[in-house]
Image (cartoon, rainbow, N blue to C red; front, side, top):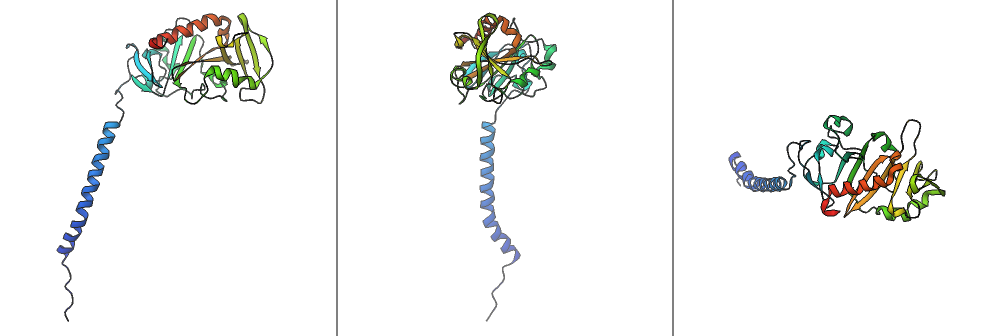
Amino acid sequence: MTAPAKPSPRTRRSARGLFTSPFAAFVASVAAAVGFVAYVLWPTWPSAPAALDAPALPITVAGVLFQVPPAAIRATVQRHAGPHERIDLAFLWPSLEPPQPNAEASDHSDGKPVDANDSGDETGSIAKEATNNTDGRLFVTIAALGSVLPPVERLNSVYPQYVEGKASAGPDGLAILRSRAGTPYEGEDLVYVAGNPDQFFSRCTRQSDVVPGICIQERVLGAADITLRFPRDWLDHWRDLAASFDRLIAQLSPQGK
């Protein structure tokens, strides 16, 4: 009885090649397909941000088109046309002009986004915004409203749950309601037009010895939430302020005014 012949090394190598070659070809084809899809779908942002003196950039947030002057955009990484999840802006008040380029250092020109937007957080505090504000500047954040209640609905159904006592008189027909201690809005006041809150209202922090009071007002345009931050002292001229907000939004989104 003869022993079975052992396959030669050459035969074994050939056999392995028959099985590995199709698999390698399959892996290569899958890798090529994945690479092509990644190349096609990869966002093609400009290699450099727009110059500060460039014309207004067409930017969409939550499907709403805005025309934004590059000098008003606080984060360098956001200075490009196209869709954005959010944009952070600054304007001088009452002129509503973008800040001068030599003032960029205080406007996060290092390319890092500013702090997370408070406008979409019903239980958030705006106290932290006081340290980020600068006299004479109006800070604006535009982001998707998402599933958050619109500002007027929050005014009517959310904020009243957290205020205390009766309203006190504010400047030029405004009323002020203090938020209760131990609530999500502790340290804030709800400021609104007495008898017609829908006309003008904002949430404001109270001024301390070292930190000025800051207010926010929100506007909704389509699916976009526009949050405006300003010093509480400006409420003395709230009628001019409200008109400025209307004018600014019309400038940023002429088709949406």
